[in-house]
Length: 381
Image (cartoon, rainbow, N blue to C red; front, side, top):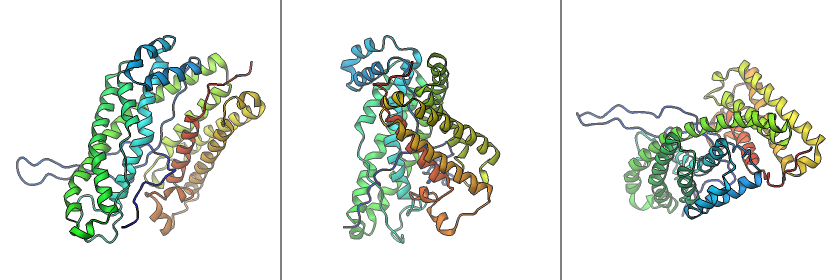
C-alpha cells in the first residue's frame, strides 16, 4: 500500500479570491456545451468573525441554542430579543464562515493535490511520472448544520441563502467523489487495473471540483462583502460606545489585517502595487503597535480575555511576513528555482517574502482571533 494521501494536519483553511474558471472551447456538434475545469493554486484566506455587540455571554447563549437545532429555535429567539440587526447578521454569518474556514479549504486542498500530478484538461493517462492521489475529506456535518441553521435565521437575505445553498449542493456532490478517489489511489488499486477506474473517475472529479470552486467563489464573495460591512460598522460602534479599549483593539487589528491581505494577495510579485501596499502596511503596523501598547498598559483587562497576548504574537508574525513581501518587491529580489517550485503548492508558506507565507500568517491570525473567548471580559472603567 502506498503512502496515505491525507490532508496535512495543522493547516489553516484559506479564502479564495475571485478568479475566472478556465472554460474550454466546445466540442464539435450543435449540442456540445463548453466545459469548465478546476483552476489550481488560487490564493485563499480565512474570514474573521465579528464580535456581537450585546453582552458577550448572551451571544454565546444564542450560538449554543442555534447549534442545537430547530427544536431550540424559540429559546434562541427569546435569547436574541435584545440583539440589533447587526448582531443577528453576525450570528447568521457565523454558520457560513465556519464552512468557509473549514470544509471549503479542505476540499480545495484535495483538488490542488489532484491537480498537482494530473493534467486536468487531458485527464488521467496512466503514464504520469508521479501518482500522489488526493487528500481525503470526510463529510463535515457540523458545517451543513451550520448552513441550514443560518439559512433559517434572521435577518432574511436571499443572496446569502441562495449562495450558501448552492455551495452546500456542490459540496455534497464532490465529497463522496473525493473519498472514493482517495481510497482508490491510497490502496494502489491503479496498479491492478492499469488506471482504468482512475480514468473513469476523472471527469466527475474535474467537473465536480470546478462546480465546487465556482460555487465557493460566489459564496465567499457574498459572505465576505456582508462581513466587511458588518466589521466596519462594529468598529465604529465599539469606539463610540466603549472607546479604544481591548475589543476595539482586536477589531481594529483585524480590519487593518484584512485590508493588507487584500492588497498583498496577488498572482506574481510584478502585480503588487508597492506604494499602496506600503501605505496599508503602515496602517496595520500602527494598529498592532497600539494594541500591544494598550495590552501592556491595561494588564487586568487583557488578562480577562484568555490568550490575548498570543493574538498579539500572531499579529506580529503577520506583520513580519508582510514586511518580508514588501522587501522582496522593493529590492526586486527574484525567487530561486527551488523557491519557485514551492510557490503555488502546500509549501509556499516556507518561502520568505511570498504571498503564501503572508497568507498563512494571516490565516493563523484569523484563527487566533476567532478563538478568543470574551465571555469573561472585564473592560477597564
